[in-house]
Length: 308
Ligand SMILES: NC(=O)C1=CN([C@@H]2O[C@H](COP(=O)(O)OP(=O)(O)OC[C@H]3O[C@@H](n4cnc5c(N)ncnc54)[C@H](OP(=O)(O)O)[C@@H]3O)[C@@H](O)[C@H]2O)C=CC1
Ligand SMILES: CCCCCCCCCCCCCCCC(=O)[C@@H](N)CO
Image 1: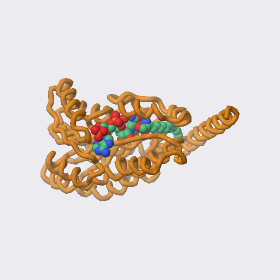
Image 2 (image 1 turned 180 degrees about the vertical axis):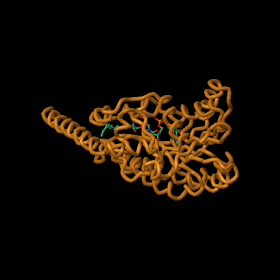
Image 3 (image 1 turned 30 degrees about the vertical axis):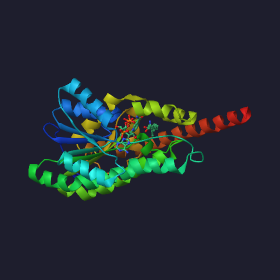
Image 4 (image 1 turned 45 degrees about the vertical axis):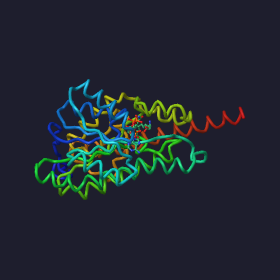
């Protein structure tokens, strides 16, 4: 029955010879995805703000793969700049909205300016990209008759709220709403949406984040095992190629995907089956995890009051 019901229908989205545009492609997960996609024979374009870092990334990708990538300097907060960069890059087959910023802090202490900055880049930036890329993408799927993809980089903090991440989690949860609604709107054009949910990943951005991370954020995020950027990139690209809507990256991520399946699209009958069977068990696991987190928070506050 699930083989009949699962929607949208499973798709194979090839990368070889196709145009893959990756935002935040000059660093961390984006750079790892750009390198892996170039190695698979895709025509790769990367977009970020800093032109010098883009050139550096282009050199690193050329050294690793022998392939040249297109570079586009733009701030995703600037809709006109994004539209200009996409016009320059040409029609896209696989759009990877991976750019992102993250500064963890308790909301009470965090400046509203910093909250808005995260929402503007992580959420509004993705709107600008999709709006700019979609018309040419649709034309292109008509021409090539091949399925296309819009991939969005969320985070496990976009599946569960985490201490210190009010702004960041909000921006990443929001991408799921965008993605679910967008999938309805673009399926008629054979475009598949993928949401990627990595755990803590070793990247330059993560090294910066760690300088300011509250201890409780560290402890709770540590419930999910850390990963290397190359391994996240591999999971992300495999998920995109098989047209998966939800793309978990590690074992805890697979559990989170079942626990938070909700009403998301599911093209795999097997995964749908696991979600149905796992729902009750994973809800129980989730309650155990929350018990643990709340105990940790309680103890931490008790201890720190004593020292105050
Ligand atoms: N590392 C981690 O632990 C995890 C990361 N993620 C997500 O993965 C994505 C990549 O993270 P990671 O590789 O660690 O990040 P990095 O900080 O290493 O790289 C971020 C990239 O995004 C670009 N970028 C940032 N702001 C803008 C902007 N306004 N306009 C255009 N480009 C921008 C940066 O270039 P420039 O500054 O030059 O613009 C850079 O290329 C993010 O969305 C992040 O939220 C999810 C889970 C865990
Ligand atoms: C039901 C079963 C539950 C399974 C375990 C749940 C574990 C949840 C851990 C949440 C980790 C959040 C990391 C965010 C990383 C990130 O995005 C930042 N590094 C910024 O980039």
